[in-house]
Image 1 (cartoon, rainbow, N blue to C red):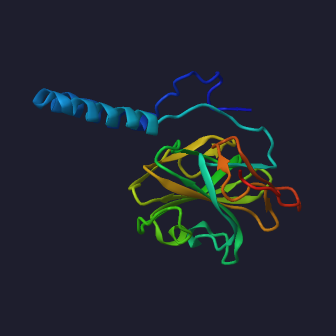
Image 2: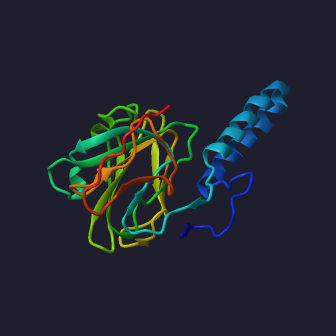
Image 3: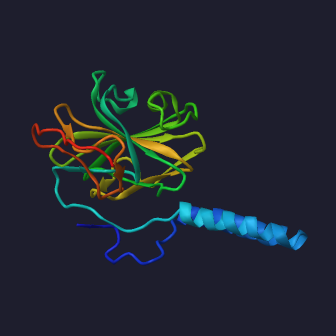
Length: 234
């Protein structure tokens, strides 16, 4: 299945519609500052270009396999292991396999659903804005939690977590929506984290430090036990 766009990606990825107002603001600021003092035009132009890069939304090709859990985010795997899911997900109080992915300000920040299914719940939780690469950010930071039920009945938790610079999580879909794996669900502004909570017995297939691509990198398979991936990031 080709996620979202049925076209080959171009050399310049498209900009998500939520980013155009920021690009326009900095472009106009560059023109205004340049009119006051010409050297100020260039820093403003660089900020506008950075915003265009930050809000890029490239096409991705998602595996068409209901057993596969794909990455919701571009970034780096910073945590793999059991963790108690946020209470608003309704997944119980026992630790579940969890994979945490940190996005820095240079990563794509459009997030995608890791599995096909129905959005059962979407819940916002106010909190702090700690560095999202820290494990405690999963519990203490501002977050938006998604509970997704697959056609086979598995329930997967996806938590978008605001970071040190991020101040806004923008959802794209409502509870009840039916999604294909790799569909866009939201955007976090400017540096953040995604945690994926998996059913008991699911074995993660990524390594700490590994880079991921939203909608493409396989995080786990939902069918039965499987040996964890061995290796190292070089």
